[in-house]
Image (cartoon, rainbow, N blue to C red; front, side):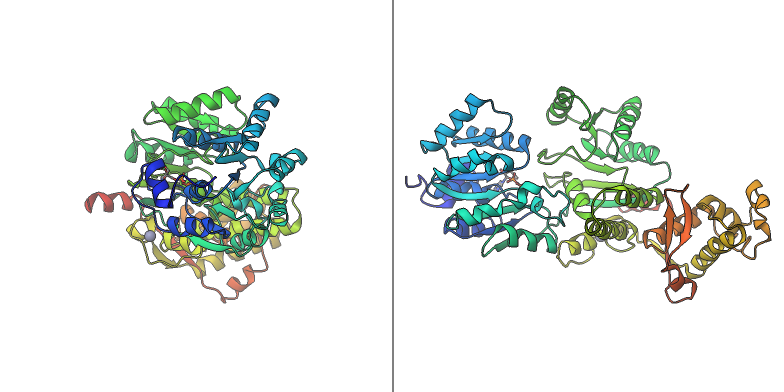
Length: 525
Ligand code: ADP
Ligand code: ZN
């Protein structure tokens, strides 16, 4: 059956009611309509869906959309039907007779788009169904799930290579909002043939990035929301379900409209909280990362992280849920030594193989470098996704450049104190004791171990405890110190520590006057 629409623009205007394509959409669509394979890389909210929906309308047959997210699938199908298109999905939420009805419609050529969960598509019955259909294209949404390097690896996605083998003549569109260079290569290699890439900028200029020193994270969060986003809609991400519930309670206790969301809550509660978040104004969703994939709410004014994400992809995707309407929004994160320790520990304890652990560690190190950065955060973020840019003027480091102090000597003092304490007592010590020794503070413990007699006792009295902790965190982030989470967070030197002790690597400490960013912003309007 020939398309009802002579051109892609025609479909855009008549079905969606939009006047023009966004950058790259038109090119990607033309390429796929002509039968080419495409990798479409656009940030969330960038308009990826049209890049397969319109070609599916223009080409003969039904467009098969593989999507890992059931909720997203249902939303998209509902939206398409709303527009008058013939769309359906096949996933585990359908009962047998509903599934049969969808299959019948597909056979009769009554569908423009059919969404399928990957395991459904790959099942014998799924493949048998497809074998009988005239297929306009395959769209593989969230294509980064194919990559082991990606942070969302799904084994079924690896098997989608079968699409290329069985239907070599049907164009494939792989879409994702998160893919660094290695992931990109993997997607093309596993899913596509020629793999023309359509990559739009990942910059979200309206999002202001900010990382604060975590002292009392929850109090800082409350303060941040009250002073900057008092009545705004936002998302607060925490690592654990427990923290989610406690933080939601804490915020509610202070009169904010906060709701918890994590996979451990009953489905009905989750659905109810999601509805309120979408329908009401000014709801703060406190959530684990289970929340948000595919959630499209335009006026989220802030995304806060109480725990550091384990990769830049995760950070970008989560913060990307802020400010989809293009209006100013804040990405705020509290970050401390515990984040370094915790994330390293999670990798260590996971039962993944060594290669995966090395990968996770590399990703974590990139994230740590972003958190520790003293220069433009956006430049670093974009560089991670392969884009070069210039300082943005809309992140904490641009707005309030931290002072860089040469802390090489301080780092040497810190490292030698760790060394001497261990040498003297035959055991390692945690940060608080090491800092006491450095600052020359006599405690029961320094007495007991005779550490007040060490040559390094008191050599660091010129720096505050906070400064020492800052330095320590920075050294830990760079692996110049190891924090042993399995043993009371005691500190060990590493191979790399030597380089600093020998004076072969200089260490710079980032120093920011507390509160100066706020003052500066209010004075500059
Ligand atoms: P993504 O899948 O990349 O996150 P979507 O495809 O869901 O993004 O698009 C995000 C929003 O932008 C949707 O509301 C969509 O209808 C809208 N949109 C997409 N393309 C255009 C366009 N050319 N003109 C206007 N709005 C558009
Ligand atoms: Zn910047």
